[in-house]
Amino acid sequence: MARYSDVRNSGERYSDDRGMGWLSVRGLAMMAGGAALAVVASRLLPPVVAQMAGSARASSGRDAFDALINDHRHIQSLLNEMVQTPIDATMRRTQLLLRLKRRLAAHAMAEEDVVYPMLHDQAHKQDDTRQLYGEHAEMKMHLFTLERLPKDDPRWLAVAHELKRIVQGHIRQEEEIDFPALRNALDQGETAVMSGSVAREKALIL
Ligand SMILES: [Fe+2]
Ligand SMILES: [Fe+2]
Image (cartoon, rainbow, N blue to C red; front, side, top):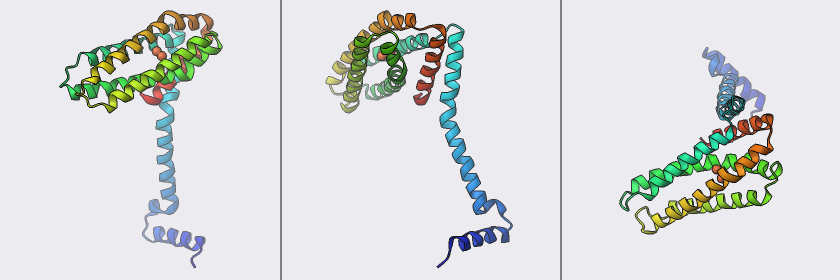
């Protein structure tokens, strides 16, 4: 029975005999290692860079709250477009829904993983935090229904209108009550940390 050392030695001889050292087992392992490192770097670096950029932006006056409010405007304009689509615009509905889902997913992840826990712990808005998490769940269930329904189903528009209504109320609550409360509860350093973390969470999806 061939032992591992025999296989390894014959593998090394094979590569040496042909004068193709770069194809040796070690060479291949190094290439694979390099490729794996590149994959890891491509996954890890954007969030890390985004986090640093987010913190830097916050110290120059544009913080995570501005970025989140900017997301709200994009989300609202996508919803406005969705509810204006005619019943036969099935491709357009599919496209708008995908764009909304992507934007909402990144935004919700940043809020659920960073902003809401801080709203709970640092602004002591426990009831509001629970309500906001619950509304995100409602939005996701509506998105699921919109995805499952045929895009020319008469119910599609009614669900889109309902989603728009939930999102509007939710955004008003965040922008008029909870974001200002959290902004007041955090000092400049904490705001910068939060801004970096929000940028990192969004970079994981966008
Ligand atoms: Fe939210
Ligand atoms: Fe939001």
